[in-house]
Image 1 (tube, rainbow, N blue to C red):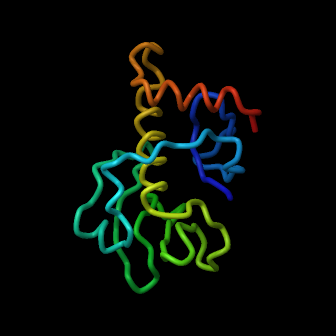
Image 2: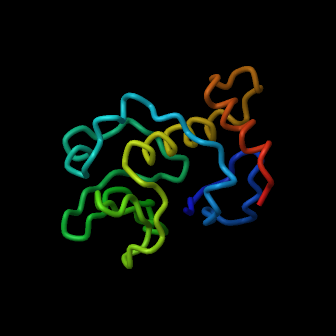
Image 3: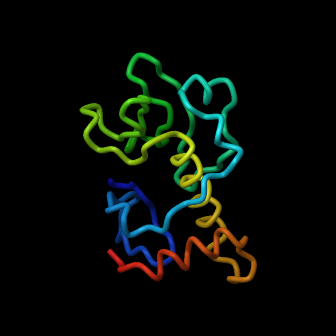
Length: 141
């Protein structure tokens, strides 16, 4: 499975906004209980998650093409179908998450980590510190 990421500690993505990486190099993400009830894009539409994106992504539901999250310049658009998962291409081949709760949990911790990464390490929340350490313990890209 793949993941699309932006510059986090331990991930050298070069001079680009996003990079498609092998998700196996990332640590497992603990599913945040506040996202357990997200099973469809209707769930997002009815209760938009409170996630601040470092790349100005936002939730915008389009039921015609199943898109629900997009970059401000449409560099990346995320789609969801329960039988497929979360994917980033209209051909449904680049699957990035098996379900919405995992996807939301991962973008949440990555966004919070990104915003805190310039603070002293002890100012990171424990789950953010663990996530960064998990990246550092894996082989860099």
